[in-house]
Length: 500
Image (cartoon, rainbow, N blue to C red; front, side):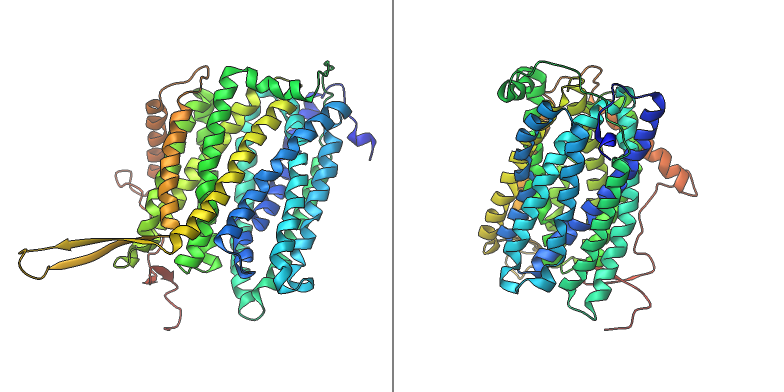
């Protein structure tokens, strides 16, 4: 066991190819655990325990706050030179701490559950952040640079495909379980399965060899952490990453809250929308990777990022009082655009950050990158939670009125939109997204082209796929996901379901 944790002077071609496959399997297992223990499931679990908007914001902030522990982990990695050992030990401890969360409904009194949940998640994400520092530096030296984009695209695609199907099945299982048992206890079994998946991933990760770190003079932690800031272009990248992560984490933690609290959707539909986004991720990973390799990461981000923050403006239209029938199609458009945009941005930001990190010295660059992301992502949801509670008691109603004659009663009065609470958060998020877009343009990258070129190739690829899927090449692909179903209160229903 200890021998397998020791670095090797170099990796053979066979060891490298084997590592790429093992890292894909580990990525699938790790993503299964992540999907089932965060996002919609964690938010829903917290809401069952009585969490407010402020608590939801704090839950979303714990993970990025924990990224500060990447800084002392840099020192640990540089001093020990054992990245694999650091990763395996901290990742294993992190995944096992979720046992405490899984047992909350059974062992902890209701009034103490939220506090224990926050403490357990703090330990879980703190150890995970330490593991991430060693892991990113380790795989930076394992994956050949000319195969990096393709590898991450394949890893993300497989992870998204497997976790999407499991998360949808889990959402249905939670709804079914809640009919006969207290729903909070159902999360024990869900989180237990996630823990098993996470620990299984460590088995495959442990079989990946670690190349020895190059011998370099250690000048101290502060000088090491200062290196990324001495690179002008890397500073521009860090500024964009900070603004982007602030924007995303200001809004995205409250998507599930909006669906459950405002739109009254069940977990099946909430997870179904998440799966739709994940499957769109899978479909577009390969396309974004090809565009990234043929043009530049910056050009792809400049096209993908605006697609994401544009959807913030669509959320208030899902709750129009006099147009409930539009809720389902608007939600579908939102989550499809989410999937398309986040796959491109996440892939290309990862590529930019890793390619800019020197071989054998990636730990400090990756740690500073994670620290900037963590600070932005920690502050954003807390501020958003405070703002959401403030706006919850305030409302802006937009009414459309048509007069045939100004002296008589209007012919048509339509309440187009009621803006309150989280609706204002989405509006603020859109403005932050515009700021993030302008930070993208400041980054310099060799081989970059105008976003118009990438956008044209993206549309061309979508039309090509549409022609393959459509039975008639001249007919554009349309999305008719609710054909053959009844729509009641904007929610699709099985046509064979009994009348209420």
